Image 1: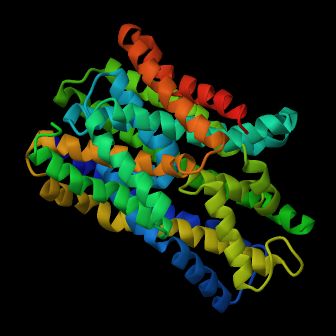
Image 2 (image 1 turned 60 degrees about the vertical axis):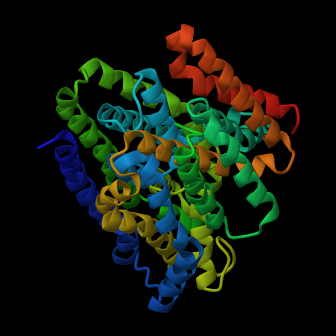
Image 3 (image 1 turned 90 degrees about the horizontal axis):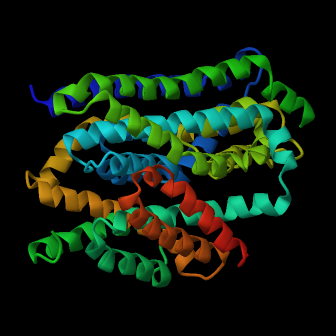
Length: 218
Length: 231
């Protein structure tokens, strides 16, 4: 069998088993809270909480795995959804790993390289998170408030701008229509935020299809 | 609230949290092992895999710190163990606090406010978990079928597939940068300085490859400093 088939088979087996395990373990604290500490919330309020949160985020349950799949691939999707922060950490990690080793996204080598990069980002992520959960008060206590404000307000815009550029330099012509489309829609068309993601990804894919046929991009 | 937080920070919950966090790390390590195993069959050596892993580690440092900077706010309302689980799986602090608040609201009280007792906390916790499971369930149900879908859209034309991926990436990050660009603030400057520095760093990286590992970190710091003057 070829690499893709073999690789996907192993990745999917591990990935799906882990997703199920993670779903089950998600409710462990709630179970302990009931059994050990005697919490007995009414079924009605549990369902109400669940229903309201699903109404708010339900669209993202479907849209994020689909849109990120194109960028992260199969192994990247399992890791990315489970560990979260796909835009902030997983995609940048994969992109950097590909750049550093001079590999192309989507190629066979690229698939393994981005998997390695994403796994590396998870190790850093969990290590830093764990340190801060335990020592957060001591560490964050010494930072002046304006530094904390600067970090929490400005890191994400700086990060997203930088990652955008990382992708743009590879195929600058796509950015000529992709970015203006996104900005115009964002500025002038009010809609729920998942609508903006769909247009940004799939709207631009349609334009790319024409641009590719017209040999504007290659 | 004090009493509740004492329960929320109790040993059994640290145990539950350790299990959940381990699942995330174990998945990453299993995939690293698979990567090594398959590397030879596509002509990659171990050194390249290690390089990739290392650069992934370095690239996440800045964003990981950005994520934890708000962690105290979360620990002070839901406790350490739950914050640890929720931030290591799927959630951002903002999403998780919204879920916790939604759970409290479903009981007719405010998160941490009057009337927020053990049962209300249980609903908050359940709502956070159920929300996270929405994503996990979708991935469990559909991701293994996605490569067939993408084969259908992408076909066998490798140039077109590369363009599809590039379009998705550029579209996605245009989307994420757009809120900062349509309205001027310090964040606008941070995004633009971040992008411009990245452009410069990529050019420098062509002559000095070692810089590629650190480009993202340097660009973020440049963006932070640039934006700071306009805050």
